[in-house]
Image 1 (cartoon, one colour):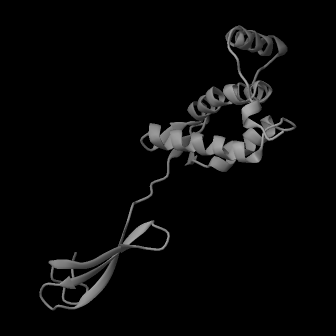
Image 2 (image 1 turned 90 degrees about the horizontal axis):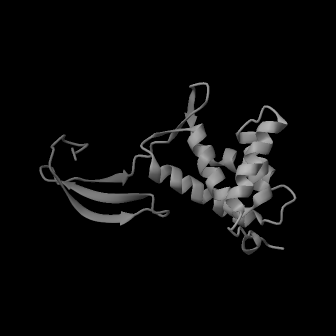
Image 3 (image 1 turned 180 degrees about the horizontal axis):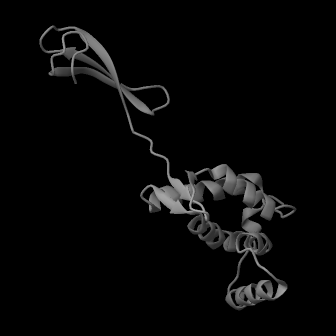
Length: 164
């Protein structure tokens, strides 16, 4: 670290401690030439994950958009808001862990659907109907048939995630 007073390139760290919210480290340093002290802060560079939309445009990942879609799909379903917030936090964590710095909106939609199917069947169908943008009743019924075949023999129970 270069000394802000004399420009000398060698300094020593005298004290290090995290700042209040643990998002950075405060370091007291001393210049090896002029012995003057100064403070530096070290923090992780936060690069947003960019979402590539269907039209090719890019925008920063925003979990509030996912929450809005999930809230709409779960409307009038017996699922608490805390469960939904945790659900969206899990999706956000998965997005940040699974990609470099870009992900397509369709990949996010698939992640949501993969998790939503285990949370609530009705919410899953509602979300899928919007996400998959069915053009007619026939394509919607084909998707429902696939779901029914998948659900046969499997137990999906959202009651453990509800508050009612």
